[in-house]
Amino acid sequence: MSRSKTRSRRQRQQRARRQPVQLISQPSTTLAHILSISVLDHVLGWLLARPRVLQAVGVCLGIGLVGLALHPLLASVVSPPPAAKPTQMAPTNPPSAAQASSTEEAAIELVAAYNQASITAALVGRADVMAPYLAPDGSAWTDSQAEYQRRAARGETHNPALTRWGVLRVAVSGDAATVETQEQWDDQTSVGGQVISSRRGILTQNVYELRRVPTTQRWQIATVTTTSIID
Image 1 (tube, rainbow, N blue to C red):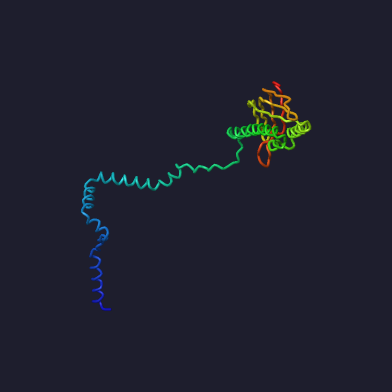
Image 2 (tube, rainbow, N blue to C red; image 1 turned 90 degrees about the horizontal axis):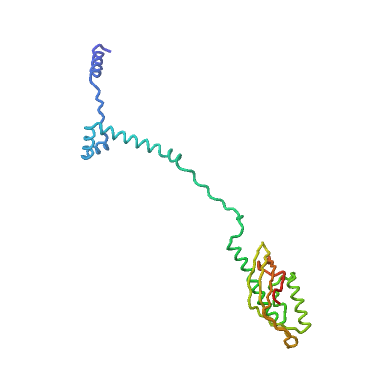
């Protein structure tokens, strides 16, 4: 290589070092479009002319960004855990007052129906009319059958009438109940078609012991205890 060529290459390298490198970045198209909006340009110019306001705006923006970043953490700490759903448990309370009252009323209604059936049974001379209201294994049913057998043997008929009655006490315990009443009866007794006795105002106090039938859940009278107050 000749000396002239070497000298020419060195001169070109020295000129390249002396020329300053221009590092002027051109704004992007989006930024140029934003700056071209006159309103934004005016606002930015106003803020740049007031550094204190610009500083306050920057502080507010910083606080807002910090709040947004901490919001999920604060929400998880402050929010209470979801309430547990109540579990359904079998009721252990005794029957309500309404249920107890309904049970007592059913027992009283049975006694009232039995009294009406006893009047019909006396008129027709048949004990089986009272059978639906009496427990088949109870003493009340046994005593009724024995009484009607006695009447049939004597040819005795009765014409009773319940003129007044009232409930003195009702007690229910599970499948057993007690109904205590006071009753006033009139009764006319005949034998062979002839009236042999006519009594009015027979006052009695009666205690009915009831049992609930498991299959039908209805009451039946097991025993009847009658005490004469006015005979």
